[in-house]
Image (cartoon, rainbow, N blue to C red):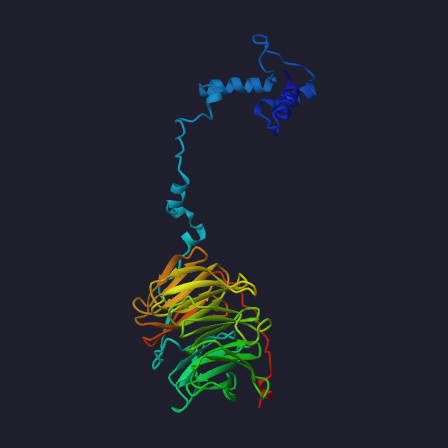
Amino acid sequence: MDARSLSRCNRRNCDENLDRFIPNRSAMDFDYAHYMLTERRVVTDSENPAAVVISPSRKAFRKRLAEATGMNRTRILAFKNKPSVPVQLTPEEWFSRSPSPQSKSSKHRSRDIPKTSNLKLDAPDIVNDFNLNLLDWGCCDVLALALGNTVYLWNDYDKSTSELVTVDDESGPITSVSWAPDGRHLAIGLNNSLVQLWDSTTSRRLRTIWCGHRGRVASMAWNNHILSTGGREGTIVNNDVRVESHIVETYRGHQLEVCGLMWSPSGQQLASGGNDGLVHIWDRLNSPTRWLHRFDQHKAAVKALAWCPFQQNLLASAGGEGDHCIKFWKTSTNTGACLQTVDTGSPVSALLWSTNDRELLSSHCIPNNQLTLWEYPSMVKMAELNGHTSSVLSMAQSPDGCTVASAAADESLQFWNVFEACKPSRKLEPFVNFSRIR
């Protein structure tokens, strides 16, 4: 039987068995096919007429190969030892097995994460209060840090430090700082319930506003020209800083101080965390005056909030002393649910997402005062960064997303190169002419 007849036979058998045709090597003698096309002669084996017909060149090759190796050609690819019989596991045994170390991605196995800070600065007189937000890094690569009654600016370009403002004792201490999206204007929250707006390039105060709070302003967040402020009495106020009558919305839902505020990347949803352990989601479009979702699963103050940059409507939150948990929430309009909970073992003061990888960084208080890097969504601990000797109070991320600054109660400001291969930051244009504000 020639190769073509054998191929037709294989196809016919496959059709009868209702299976696809899989060619075998006996039907793929290309030397024979070439020989038949060019020479048009049939080569037979006189000693064994029933043998499969092969070309002279292949027959010579087989003979030379047998002489050179001294073995049968069919044994060249034979196993030296029989393969081991695979272990049969029940479904229960499969799920009870711990993951193999090789299950981690090669990227994370080979990645070198610095365990120590690359720069350390003194931060004397920093207020040791878990609820305050005293550190922020603007898009112009300038870091703002509040120490007592003074706000200092640290420029990452030339590593210079300057003093922006010192308030009097009646107004201080400073309880929160937040850069506007243009990276030029800074909002400063005060202990006397007022908020000041400053132009960092000219060191000039543009405006002082009262947002209706009855105590200190511990948290702030920008959404374009809207500045949201959180008060000690539990209210949240949205302020349009372009106009004289700046209060546009007031949210009421927390019973204690609002210590965490963050707008979603879309600018539609505002997440708030309070000293009452509650997390609220406020939606400007669908529910402008009442919370869209209310999450009450934390057991302590929620200051750490972080919107996921790569998955819409995913919020990470974490609790302080007595809670220690990072929780992930789905915040879409129709659904609000806790997707995952991770017990970190110590209070969490801040959360930061990587802008280029599926990673999350958390900062912690006593007993270890560490920064912990997590792989998301497995929440496998990738690294612990140790260097602070007291509770880490705040964290801020550089515009390129690679460097993280942490301020702690040990009166130090440390910089960590924790994230890698970050995308260049998007250049933001000024959203409003602050010089026209009266």
